[in-house]
Amino acid sequence: MALPKLTIRKITLDVPIIQGGMGVGISWENLAGAVAKEGAMGVVSAVGTGYRFPELVKKDKLGRPIGPENTHNKEALKRIIQKAKELSQGRGAIGVNVLCAITDYQRVVRDAAEAGADAIISGAGLPLKLPEYVKGFDIALIPIVSSARALKLICQTWEKRYQRLPDAVVLEGPLSGGHQGFHKEDCFKKEYQLESLLPEVLEEAKNLGDLKVIVAGGVWSYQDIKKYLEMGASGVQIATRFICTYECDAPQIYKEILLKLNPEDIILINSPVGYPLRVVKTPFIEKFLAGYRDFKGCVSNCLTPCKKGEKASQVGFCIAEKLSAAWMGNYEEGIFISGANGHLLKKQGIIRVKDLIAILTGQKEDPTLQ
Image (cartoon, rainbow, N blue to C red):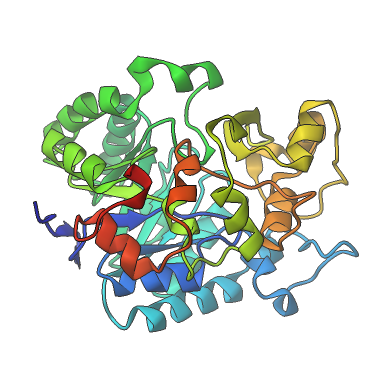
Protein backbone atom coordinates (compact mmCIF):
# COMPACT_ATOMS: atom_id res chain seq x y z
CA MET A 1 0.00 0.00 0.00
CA ALA A 2 1.46 3.34 -1.07
CA LEU A 3 0.78 6.00 1.55
CA PRO A 4 -1.37 8.93 0.37
CA LYS A 5 -0.23 12.53 0.25
CA LEU A 6 -1.31 14.85 3.04
CA THR A 7 -2.59 18.36 2.34
CA ILE A 8 -2.85 20.84 5.23
CA ARG A 9 -3.87 24.36 4.20
CA LYS A 10 -1.37 25.34 1.46
CA ILE A 11 1.04 22.51 2.36
CA THR A 12 1.09 19.26 0.40
CA LEU A 13 3.30 16.52 1.80
CA ASP A 14 4.34 13.59 -0.39
CA VAL A 15 4.66 11.56 2.82
CA PRO A 16 1.83 11.82 5.43
CA ILE A 17 4.29 11.96 8.32
CA ILE A 18 4.96 14.82 10.71
CA GLN A 19 8.16 14.53 12.74
CA GLY A 20 7.27 15.36 16.33
CA GLY A 21 8.81 18.46 17.92
CA MET A 22 11.36 17.52 20.59
CA GLY A 23 12.96 20.03 22.92
CA VAL A 24 15.37 21.07 24.20
CA GLY A 25 17.50 20.76 21.09
CA ILE A 26 16.55 17.31 19.80
CA SER A 27 14.64 18.58 16.76
CA TRP A 28 16.22 21.75 15.49
CA GLU A 29 17.48 22.63 12.03
CA ASN A 30 19.35 19.47 11.06
CA LEU A 31 16.61 16.96 11.82
CA ALA A 32 13.71 19.14 10.66
CA GLY A 33 15.47 20.02 7.43
CA ALA A 34 16.35 16.40 6.66
CA VAL A 35 12.80 15.19 7.29
CA ALA A 36 11.30 17.91 5.09
CA LYS A 37 13.77 17.06 2.33
CA GLU A 38 12.19 13.60 2.17
CA GLY A 39 8.74 15.08 1.55
CA ALA A 40 7.37 14.97 5.10
CA MET A 41 6.98 17.77 7.67
CA GLY A 42 10.06 18.49 9.72
CA VAL A 43 9.32 20.20 13.01
CA VAL A 44 11.53 22.58 14.98
CA SER A 45 11.03 22.81 18.72
CA ALA A 46 10.74 26.43 19.88
CA VAL A 47 11.65 25.54 23.48
CA GLY A 48 15.02 26.68 24.79
CA THR A 49 16.39 28.00 21.50
CA GLY A 50 18.74 30.26 23.48
CA TYR A 51 20.83 27.18 24.21
CA ARG A 52 21.43 26.68 20.48
CA PHE A 53 23.20 30.01 20.01
CA PRO A 54 24.58 30.99 23.45
CA GLU A 55 26.42 33.95 21.93
CA LEU A 56 23.05 35.61 21.27
CA VAL A 57 21.76 35.55 24.84
CA LYS A 58 22.42 36.76 28.36
CA LYS A 59 23.32 33.89 30.70
CA ASP A 60 23.92 33.34 34.42
CA LYS A 61 27.15 31.86 35.80
CA LEU A 62 25.80 28.33 35.22
CA GLY A 63 25.21 29.10 31.53
CA ARG A 64 21.42 29.27 31.83
CA PRO A 65 19.67 31.90 29.66
CA ILE A 66 18.21 34.68 31.79
CA GLY A 67 14.49 35.29 31.32
CA PRO A 68 12.14 33.95 28.63
CA GLU A 69 13.36 36.41 26.00
CA ASN A 70 16.77 34.73 26.15
CA THR A 71 15.57 31.17 26.81
CA HIS A 72 13.11 31.15 23.90
CA ASN A 73 15.18 33.49 21.80
CA LYS A 74 13.72 35.16 18.71
CA GLU A 75 16.91 35.44 16.66
CA ALA A 76 17.95 31.87 17.52
CA LEU A 77 14.57 30.51 16.42
CA LYS A 78 14.77 32.52 13.20
CA ARG A 79 18.21 31.07 12.40
CA ILE A 80 17.04 27.52 13.14
CA ILE A 81 13.94 27.82 10.93
CA GLN A 82 15.79 29.42 8.06
CA LYS A 83 18.59 26.84 8.18
CA ALA A 84 16.01 24.02 8.26
CA LYS A 85 14.38 25.51 5.17
CA GLU A 86 17.72 25.64 3.39
CA LEU A 87 18.40 21.99 4.23
CA SER A 88 14.95 20.96 3.00
CA GLN A 89 15.78 22.18 -0.51
CA GLY A 90 12.21 23.38 -0.95
CA ARG A 91 10.59 20.02 -0.29
CA GLY A 92 8.09 19.05 2.40
CA ALA A 93 7.40 21.67 5.03
CA ILE A 94 8.91 23.14 8.19
CA GLY A 95 6.62 23.38 11.18
CA VAL A 96 7.35 24.80 14.63
CA ASN A 97 6.16 23.18 17.84
CA VAL A 98 5.30 25.85 20.41
CA LEU A 99 4.09 24.64 23.80
CA CYS A 100 1.12 26.59 25.16
CA ALA A 101 2.81 26.31 28.55
CA ILE A 102 5.90 28.35 27.69
CA THR A 103 6.30 31.87 28.98
CA ASP A 104 5.99 34.41 26.14
CA TYR A 105 3.84 31.95 24.16
CA GLN A 106 2.22 34.71 22.12
CA ARG A 107 5.56 36.27 21.25
CA VAL A 108 7.20 32.95 20.30
CA VAL A 109 4.30 31.99 18.02
CA ARG A 110 4.65 35.36 16.31
CA ASP A 111 8.43 34.89 16.08
CA ALA A 112 7.92 31.56 14.31
CA ALA A 113 5.43 33.03 11.85
CA GLU A 114 7.71 35.98 11.08
CA ALA A 115 10.63 33.62 10.50
CA GLY A 116 8.72 31.79 7.77
CA ALA A 117 7.37 28.66 9.47
CA ASP A 118 4.83 26.77 7.36
CA ALA A 119 2.85 25.56 10.36
CA ILE A 120 2.46 26.01 14.11
CA ILE A 121 1.83 22.85 16.11
CA SER A 122 0.75 23.60 19.66
CA GLY A 123 -0.12 21.50 22.70
CA ALA A 124 0.66 21.24 26.44
CA GLY A 125 -2.50 23.22 27.08
CA LEU A 126 -5.35 24.52 24.94
CA PRO A 127 -4.22 27.06 22.30
CA LEU A 128 -7.48 29.00 22.42
CA LYS A 129 -5.97 32.28 21.20
CA LEU A 130 -3.55 30.89 18.63
CA PRO A 131 -5.22 32.43 15.52
CA GLU A 132 -4.97 35.86 17.14
CA TYR A 133 -1.20 35.56 17.40
CA VAL A 134 -0.63 34.84 13.69
CA LYS A 135 -2.91 37.52 12.31
CA GLY A 136 -1.67 38.61 8.88
CA PHE A 137 0.17 35.34 8.16
CA ASP A 138 -1.01 32.53 5.89
CA ILE A 139 0.18 29.74 8.15
CA ALA A 140 -1.27 26.34 9.05
CA LEU A 141 -2.45 25.98 12.65
CA ILE A 142 -2.44 22.48 14.17
CA PRO A 143 -3.44 22.08 17.82
CA ILE A 144 -2.58 18.94 19.78
CA VAL A 145 -5.42 17.37 21.77
CA SER A 146 -5.99 14.27 23.86
CA SER A 147 -9.79 14.08 23.55
CA ALA A 148 -12.79 14.94 21.39
CA ARG A 149 -13.93 17.31 24.13
CA ALA A 150 -10.74 19.38 23.85
CA LEU A 151 -11.04 19.49 20.06
CA LYS A 152 -14.63 20.68 20.27
CA LEU A 153 -13.73 23.46 22.72
CA ILE A 154 -10.86 24.70 20.55
CA CYS A 155 -12.95 24.68 17.38
CA GLN A 156 -15.97 26.38 18.95
CA THR A 157 -13.71 29.08 20.42
CA TRP A 158 -11.79 29.68 17.19
CA GLU A 159 -14.93 29.79 15.07
CA LYS A 160 -16.67 32.24 17.39
CA ARG A 161 -13.69 34.56 17.92
CA TYR A 162 -11.73 34.27 14.68
CA GLN A 163 -14.07 32.70 12.11
CA ARG A 164 -11.63 29.89 11.36
CA LEU A 165 -11.01 26.29 12.28
CA PRO A 166 -7.73 24.41 12.74
CA ASP A 167 -6.13 23.26 9.49
CA ALA A 168 -5.60 19.83 11.07
CA VAL A 169 -5.44 18.41 14.56
CA VAL A 170 -2.95 16.06 16.23
CA LEU A 171 -4.54 13.50 18.53
CA GLU A 172 -1.80 12.36 20.91
CA GLY A 173 -2.22 9.17 22.93
CA PRO A 174 -0.40 8.35 26.20
CA LEU A 175 2.56 6.39 24.77
CA SER A 176 4.55 9.38 23.53
CA GLY A 177 7.82 10.59 24.98
CA GLY A 178 7.84 13.70 27.16
CA HIS A 179 4.77 15.26 28.71
CA GLN A 180 1.44 13.45 28.62
CA GLY A 181 -2.00 15.03 28.41
CA PHE A 182 -3.42 12.50 30.85
CA HIS A 183 -3.28 11.68 34.56
CA LYS A 184 -0.47 9.22 35.25
CA GLU A 185 -2.81 6.34 36.10
CA ASP A 186 -4.88 6.95 32.95
CA CYS A 187 -1.85 6.49 30.69
CA PHE A 188 -2.20 2.73 31.15
CA LYS A 189 -5.99 2.37 30.83
CA LYS A 190 -7.46 0.88 27.67
CA GLU A 191 -10.04 3.64 27.22
CA TYR A 192 -7.30 6.29 26.96
CA GLN A 193 -5.19 4.50 24.37
CA LEU A 194 -4.96 5.98 20.87
CA GLU A 195 -7.09 3.25 19.27
CA SER A 196 -9.88 3.98 21.75
CA LEU A 197 -9.69 7.77 21.45
CA LEU A 198 -9.52 8.00 17.66
CA PRO A 199 -13.11 7.07 16.66
CA GLU A 200 -14.66 9.73 18.90
CA VAL A 201 -12.21 12.39 17.73
CA LEU A 202 -12.81 11.45 14.08
CA GLU A 203 -16.54 11.81 14.62
CA GLU A 204 -16.09 15.22 16.20
CA ALA A 205 -13.75 16.26 13.38
CA LYS A 206 -16.34 15.21 10.81
CA ASN A 207 -19.01 17.25 12.57
CA LEU A 208 -16.71 20.27 12.39
CA GLY A 209 -16.24 20.09 8.63
CA ASP A 210 -14.18 16.96 7.99
CA LEU A 211 -11.13 18.25 9.82
CA LYS A 212 -7.99 16.16 9.18
CA VAL A 213 -6.79 14.14 12.15
CA ILE A 214 -3.11 13.28 12.64
CA VAL A 215 -2.40 10.56 15.22
CA ALA A 216 0.58 10.51 17.57
CA GLY A 217 1.87 8.76 20.67
CA GLY A 218 3.21 5.25 20.13
CA VAL A 219 2.92 5.25 16.33
CA TRP A 220 5.99 3.28 15.36
CA SER A 221 5.90 1.39 12.08
CA TYR A 222 4.56 1.28 8.53
CA GLN A 223 2.04 -1.25 9.83
CA ASP A 224 0.90 1.21 12.50
CA ILE A 225 0.56 3.96 9.91
CA LYS A 226 -1.54 1.75 7.65
CA LYS A 227 -3.75 0.75 10.59
CA TYR A 228 -4.50 4.33 11.62
CA LEU A 229 -5.06 5.51 8.05
CA GLU A 230 -7.53 2.66 7.58
CA MET A 231 -9.28 3.78 10.78
CA GLY A 232 -9.74 7.23 9.23
CA ALA A 233 -6.69 9.26 10.22
CA SER A 234 -5.10 11.44 7.52
CA GLY A 235 -1.52 11.15 8.74
CA VAL A 236 0.74 10.41 11.69
CA GLN A 237 3.21 12.20 13.92
CA ILE A 238 6.32 10.26 14.97
CA ALA A 239 9.11 11.52 17.22
CA THR A 240 11.22 8.96 19.09
CA ARG A 241 12.31 6.97 16.03
CA PHE A 242 13.85 10.11 14.54
CA ILE A 243 16.24 10.53 17.48
CA CYS A 244 18.37 7.62 16.31
CA THR A 245 19.19 9.17 12.95
CA TYR A 246 22.49 10.68 11.94
CA GLU A 247 20.81 14.01 11.22
CA CYS A 248 19.08 14.37 14.60
CA ASP A 249 20.35 17.35 16.58
CA ALA A 250 20.70 15.24 19.75
CA PRO A 251 24.27 14.49 20.86
CA GLN A 252 25.75 11.05 20.19
CA ILE A 253 25.42 10.00 23.83
CA TYR A 254 21.66 10.65 23.68
CA LYS A 255 21.33 8.26 20.75
CA GLU A 256 23.53 5.65 22.41
CA ILE A 257 21.40 5.76 25.58
CA LEU A 258 18.26 5.03 23.58
CA LEU A 259 19.97 2.16 21.74
CA LYS A 260 20.54 0.36 25.06
CA LEU A 261 17.01 0.64 26.47
CA ASN A 262 14.90 -2.17 27.85
CA PRO A 263 11.13 -1.66 28.30
CA GLU A 264 11.50 -1.20 32.06
CA ASP A 265 13.99 1.65 31.52
CA ILE A 266 11.21 3.94 30.20
CA ILE A 267 9.07 5.35 33.02
CA LEU A 268 6.70 8.17 33.99
CA ILE A 269 7.67 10.75 36.61
CA ASN A 270 6.13 13.97 37.92
CA SER A 271 7.14 17.19 36.16
CA PRO A 272 7.19 20.85 37.23
CA VAL A 273 4.84 21.50 34.30
CA GLY A 274 2.10 19.55 36.06
CA TYR A 275 1.89 16.71 33.54
CA PRO A 276 3.35 13.18 33.79
CA LEU A 277 6.70 13.05 31.99
CA ARG A 278 7.95 9.91 30.18
CA VAL A 279 11.71 9.65 30.58
CA VAL A 280 14.61 7.21 30.51
CA LYS A 281 16.10 5.87 33.74
CA THR A 282 19.51 7.53 34.02
CA PRO A 283 21.71 8.43 37.03
CA PHE A 284 19.76 11.63 37.77
CA ILE A 285 16.38 9.88 37.50
CA GLU A 286 17.56 7.06 39.78
CA LYS A 287 18.65 9.61 42.36
CA PHE A 288 15.45 11.61 41.91
CA LEU A 289 13.31 8.52 42.53
CA ALA A 290 15.31 7.91 45.69
CA GLY A 291 14.49 11.41 46.99
CA TYR A 292 17.33 13.53 45.57
CA ARG A 293 16.41 17.10 44.69
CA ASP A 294 18.47 19.38 42.45
CA PHE A 295 16.79 22.76 42.06
CA LYS A 296 19.26 25.65 41.78
CA GLY A 297 16.70 28.45 41.53
CA CYS A 298 14.80 29.88 38.58
CA VAL A 299 16.53 32.26 36.21
CA SER A 300 14.82 31.44 32.91
CA ASN A 301 11.13 31.65 33.88
CA CYS A 302 10.53 29.38 30.90
CA LEU A 303 7.14 27.80 31.68
CA THR A 304 4.09 29.56 33.09
CA PRO A 305 2.74 26.52 35.04
CA CYS A 306 6.05 26.37 36.92
CA LYS A 307 5.29 29.81 38.44
CA LYS A 308 8.86 31.15 38.28
CA GLY A 309 10.33 28.04 39.84
CA GLU A 310 7.73 27.40 42.52
CA LYS A 311 6.68 24.05 41.02
CA ALA A 312 10.24 23.13 40.10
CA SER A 313 11.24 23.68 43.73
CA GLN A 314 8.39 21.43 44.91
CA VAL A 315 9.10 18.66 42.39
CA GLY A 316 12.86 18.91 42.78
CA PHE A 317 14.30 19.91 39.41
CA CYS A 318 14.09 22.51 36.63
CA ILE A 319 12.87 20.77 33.48
CA ALA A 320 14.55 23.22 31.09
CA GLU A 321 17.88 22.86 32.89
CA LYS A 322 17.72 19.06 32.81
CA LEU A 323 16.65 18.85 29.16
CA SER A 324 19.38 21.26 28.13
CA ALA A 325 21.90 19.19 30.11
CA ALA A 326 20.84 16.17 28.04
CA TRP A 327 21.24 18.13 24.80
CA MET A 328 24.74 19.10 25.92
CA GLY A 329 25.52 15.42 26.50
CA ASN A 330 25.57 15.38 30.31
CA TYR A 331 24.66 11.76 31.05
CA GLU A 332 24.86 12.13 34.84
CA GLU A 333 22.56 15.14 35.20
CA GLY A 334 20.41 15.29 32.07
CA ILE A 335 16.85 14.09 31.55
CA PHE A 336 16.58 11.97 28.41
CA ILE A 337 13.22 11.43 26.73
CA SER A 338 11.82 8.40 24.94
CA GLY A 339 8.41 7.21 23.84
CA ALA A 340 7.10 3.95 25.27
CA ASN A 341 8.43 1.96 22.28
CA GLY A 342 11.95 3.40 22.46
CA HIS A 343 13.44 0.06 23.53
CA LEU A 344 12.87 -1.17 19.95
CA LEU A 345 15.54 1.23 18.69
CA LYS A 346 18.33 -1.18 19.61
CA LYS A 347 17.23 -3.28 16.63
CA GLN A 348 17.37 -0.27 14.32
CA GLY A 349 20.64 1.40 15.25
CA ILE A 350 21.50 4.85 13.95
CA ILE A 351 20.36 5.34 10.37
CA ARG A 352 19.80 8.15 7.89
CA VAL A 353 16.49 10.01 7.85
CA LYS A 354 16.11 8.96 4.21
CA ASP A 355 16.27 5.30 5.20
CA LEU A 356 13.89 5.76 8.13
CA ILE A 357 11.31 7.39 5.85
CA ALA A 358 11.73 4.44 3.44
CA ILE A 359 11.03 2.05 6.34
CA LEU A 360 8.02 4.04 7.53
CA THR A 361 6.52 4.12 4.03
CA GLY A 362 6.95 0.38 3.49
CA GLN A 363 9.75 0.64 0.92
CA LYS A 364 12.26 -1.10 3.20
CA GLU A 365 11.93 -3.82 5.82
CA ASP A 366 11.69 -2.66 9.42
CA PRO A 367 14.55 -4.09 11.52
CA THR A 368 12.74 -3.24 14.77
CA LEU A 369 9.96 -5.70 13.92
CA GLN A 370 12.26 -8.65 13.10
